[in-house]
Each structure stands twice: as C-alpha cells, then as structure tokens.
Image (cartoon, rainbow, N blue to C red):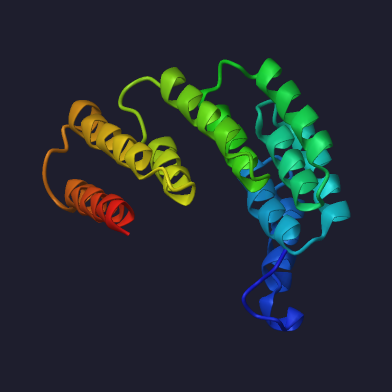
Length: 196
C-alpha cells in the first residue's frame, strides 16, 4: 500500500480513525459509521482492527457489506484466494443485490483481474432497474483503455451516452459533452497507433 507521501505520520488516517472509532462506540447500531471506519483502517494497514470491526458490522448488517469489506481487507493483505472465496459466498448469499456486483467488480480490479471485473460490471448493469447508474460502464471504459482496447473503451462510453439519454433523459450539457470529448481522444489514440 503505497501512498504519495512517504512520511507515515503525515499520510496515515490516525485522526479520522480515532474519530470514527468513537463514533461507532457512541452509535453501535449505525451501519454507515462502520463503513466510514473500515476504509481508512484497511488503507492504513490496520488489518486486525478492520477484522474486528467487520465482525461487529456483520452482527448488525445482514447485507453484502460485511463480506465486501472483509474481502477488501484480505485483498489489501495479499490474501487473494481467501478474498475470492468470501466474494463467491457473498455472491451466492446476495445475488438479488445489484450493487453487490459492482463491489465484486471493484475487488477484481484491485486484484488485477480485469476481464473478471468486466463480467461483474456487466452483471451490475443487467441487475439494475432504470434509472441505472453509469459507474460500471465508466469502469469498463477505463479498463479497456488500460488494456489498449480503445475501441472497447469507445463502445462502453457510447453505452454510457445511451444510458444517460434513455434512463435519465440527459441529452446535452457537460455530462454528455465529456463523453463526446473522451471518444474523440480515444479515436485519436487509435489513429496514432495505426500510423505509428
């Protein structure tokens, strides 16, 4: 876990963690408090504490979230096989939760499993009901570009534009214009790769 600032005392989340630990003690049945605490614990490598708070979260939250954060913690420790076991169990238990598929896709990206991530991002899209969010299409476009598949990235962005029009009636403005510029940028990359 590499952070941009090399000084641990300046780059850790000590104060934030202390705040949310106290918050959770004062509000032990408030699920979001655990989520706000778990992310900085995991990012700071405080894995044992994260395990403890995941277990506490599981006692009050019967959704996919405790298993998702448990898998985040395992991935951060490099325990990818164990993390994938947790994710498989989570998918079986909560297959009716469309947002859970986004979480699995994100975990696959963190493990460098881009093709598997795209599968789960597509499942996220299939299980949502309109109006749908575009997160997974953005992620697919980014993964395609990372892999040098500019045509795949363009296709995902075009799907985003179609979704914005169909589900949100968003046809103009910066929300759409940024995607148009992105397509033009990727088309330039394709032209450069063909001439170079």
